[in-house]
Length: 265
Image 1: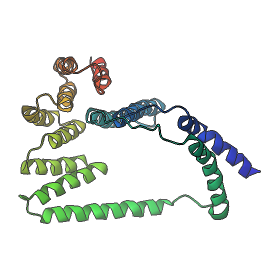
Image 2: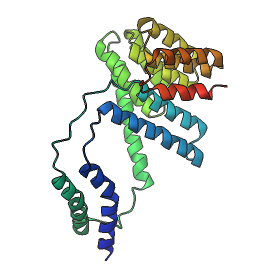
Image 3: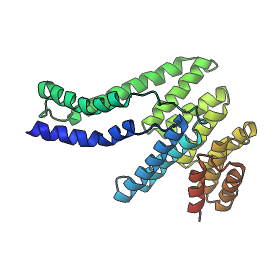
Image 4: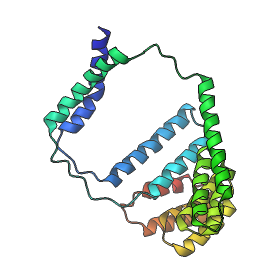
């Protein structure tokens, strides 16, 4: 009886998917789908702040990362044509997959299996730390003048940032920039410096990058963010208003900038 109940729950859970597959196709480009996902992530972060699962600093850092992705989103791709799909087969799969999953679980499943113990999670973290240490050692052995070393510094910066070591990540990014200045990497480092509270260092990086790409929306957004974090709200307002004035009405990052403007004192 319990399996029938689980099957019914699975069918109900997949009902929205069945409707999405069986309804008339709607053309949707990759960019539109990405932006919808990012906006959903912003809404979810706001809910987590309200419920106390995130503190203000974590919420701000996470929102900044999602906003960065919105600003860096590529132009709209050619829309994907799904008109050739076979609704009957797809609809059948929606209902056959839960049945197959339940059958597999009945023969191979272990519902009484305990969660991974804390010791195992600690061991995994220790393994990741050892791998990161090996990466640091490998990068340190490379000739700093080579492109291989530069790419290694970028990889190391990404790894350090993912582990929450912001100062170490900033040092790696800066070493890569010293080897060869690149606008996109300068934006990454400026964003990281803002996150660390080093707004003047971020402002200097942004000013240099804007010299090469004066109309780059992400850099202009970060310029305003650095001014806002430095307490210069009027400068931030002018920067973001100019960015909006130059943007088209359909610019995907427009809502992000407008929200930041509304939050200014």
